[in-house]
Image (cartoon, rainbow, N blue to C red; front, top):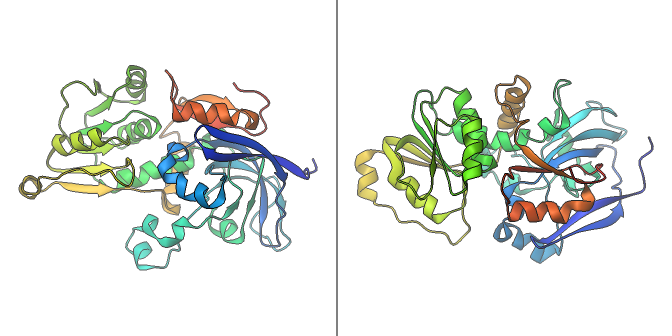
Length: 346
């Protein structure tokens, strides 16, 4: 089927101002490929206005989608490693692999992680993959995996990184604060890796039900007394949750701040307590190529299942409604997907 001249693309200004625009399908160069987007998940970071505002201030509207799976429909004349009809997962950014940070295993702190290698973004019918993106940001989707499963490779890759940085987890009690998509993926991965008793905390009863389905041994409303654990994962952008994490970690344990509440959020530390208890505090941002590859294999091997996490699917024409659902989650809302070729929501 011939590629059209124009396409529909999402244009994000604010959470309450997301529009659909008609724009030309990107033209590719000799070292680039064009991908038809099959599905792209909306990440929580897509609706963090404090995180997106610097971009919108400069560009006006942005297209942020980065949990992308699709099919290659055009290849540049110098492309040899990929062909038309290849099914791929697209990484929108990746580290340089050569700097000191990368060599030390801190790839997601690399300056190159903030460079974008796709045009415009995953909330569009077609995306152009620039030369570096073709070389470093495309993963072939196994035949056994669906496009929907492929769109989970990036978010699960972020969780793979988080859990790796708090290893070992086998046999250790764990506390996951926040049972949104990130928290649920943490629970699933921790269960697969043999963690001890897993506690899940949230303010929302329906999300705690989801946490139980995903493998949590005990669920706790955030208003209740908090259990203590060897590994504590903060998966919600809440100052209160961060304070709770500092109080609930066992001696010799580890705290992982997977989510943050913005540039001005601060918490106080009782340094002597942590000095005596020898607690470690960690942070995790994004996913490096090795995390993406590991996530792909976890999904392919059905070690971590993701099919039960998608609750809403929308076509590109319904992107405003989809973003509103993520920014203001309703009961029983977990993962929201944009499927550009979908005519109506499902």
